[in-house]
Amino acid sequence: MPLADLNISGTIPPEIGYLTGVSDLTMARNRILSGSLPGELFKLTLLEDIRIFGNSLTGTLPADIGDLTLLTYLAIQENNFVGTLPTTIGNLVLLERWFVGENEFSGPIP
Image 1 (cartoon, rainbow, N blue to C red):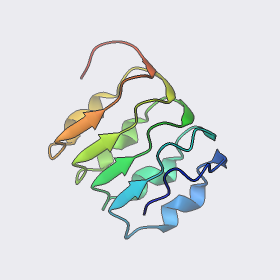
Image 2: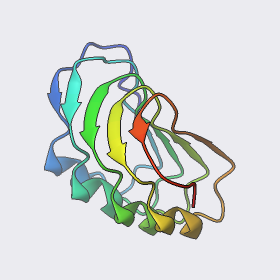
Image 3: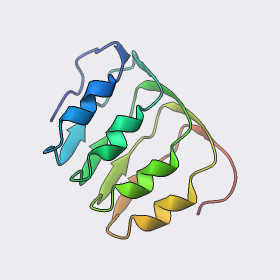
Image 4: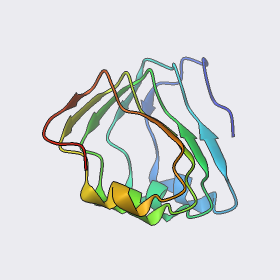
C-alpha cells in the first residue's frame, strides 16, 4: 500500500489494523506524519515490508514489532523514535534489510 510523498499529516490511525491482508506498507517521506506507531500496526502479521521513513514519528519502537515474523524489510529511519530497540527484533528471523538510523535510539543493538 504505497502512501509515499503525499504530504500526509496527522497520525497513523488505529484503523490501520483493519488492513489484515496487507503485506507491504509504505508511508515514507511525508515529513508531517507524526505521533507514535499504533499497536494495531503490529497485528498486521502478513507484513513483509514496512517503509515509514522520512516522517516525524515519535515514541518508542514497541516490543510487538517481534510479532511481524514475516518481515523481510524494515525502514524506519529519519523519524524521531527514542529509547532502546526491543529485543523482540530477534524474532524477525526473515529480516534481510533494516534501516533505523537518524532517530534517537540508545543502548545496544539486540
